[in-house]
Length: 283
Length: 264
Image 1: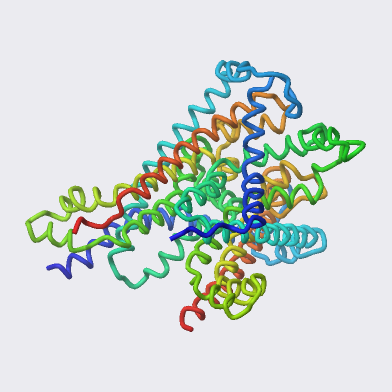
Image 2: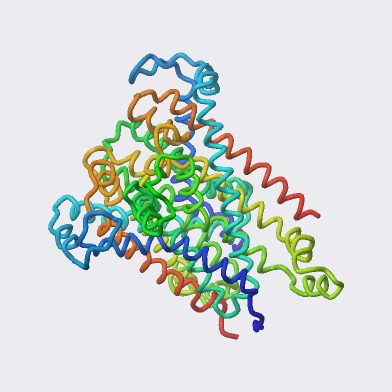
């Protein structure tokens, strides 16, 4: 009787989730794909003929520049997050003691708050007459307000700020597991603290670094709010182009193709990561 | 176990990173009480912006919309996500790997893609965009977060408890209500709080799926930012931050509370 129950129950438990995943995830993504291979007939018009021309268009010079720019910004932000997040995670995991959980919660809290609000905060700080310029003027570090908004620097800064918690969490998990006696052994055998870190701690926490890089790069690449609020026309990323294809140019066909290209790039990154992780588990 | 102190350079660096994380939030909150309209210099303390925003009909209706949407999306996603997590944590079946991959999809795909995909769905079904579509869209991504959180809670769950209940004559339904649910309740509650904050704060997916009539608080904030800066934005933002902070601190308490292990 128990076995029969085991077979029946998951179906009942799973039914709502299955319906939801199929209806609101699988079907919508398929619809986007169908749109992406239809023919664009001008503003707001989608012709039923199937074609791959949209993908060819999306890889033309005009969009390629945006794609490459998005990859560049997301990569720079990921590196910046790593440089900020690794020492932070290391400090919490190694020296946090009883306050570890609290310190980690402090890292995660900003992540749970509205991304829009946090990027808006930067918009006011970086503005021409904003807090940062006023502070720098006050300290006589600059003679005239700097143009910071609308620059690539502002966008990379915003992405770094927005996704730093994504980087820190997996790094922390990885460093937490590190056997500290190995570091002590390296030090006892005459390694300098720096070489002990580079040759023992860093290689052993590499899986955390990879996970952090993936988790940061993915949302950064597809971000739309940061370039929209603190970037300018010259710093548009792929998310902004998709948005304007749907809402301004009323060209869902190319918008869908771009959305699919974005998703494909991320899926490839995730796939490579999953393969690597699998290999590591198998040894 | 501790007792080692961080090298001062490392500790200083960590403090600087914390400052980087919190400075913008602190500045934003501080300027919501500033007399000056500009977010630059301090001109004195005031609550005027708050009294203005609590008399602003559009902001109040956006707040009401946001709360309604968040409550509906939370209820839907908590029920669906918890049932799904139970099935995935307890049973072995052929397509389990597929489910595991699908559950993570809304967490990893870019919000823009998710927003576009749901918009395409609603338009294909000729659904009128409004608060209803926003609830469905929010549920679509919250379900995954709830399922992941609840499932983590179920990892250490002793199935022998459920077996004991069954042996003592409880029906599966009674076992669920009287044994399983109370045991995993902290996980369910923190999943629900997470779903609530995700929905309450969501901008991108709402932006694609709300149509003209359904303005939530983030949508209102966005249009205030885009069309003329008013100092009220700081106040609205501060309220949003306060709601999320409260929900997440409560969720953290519950998640850390008694682990799902029986007294020995």
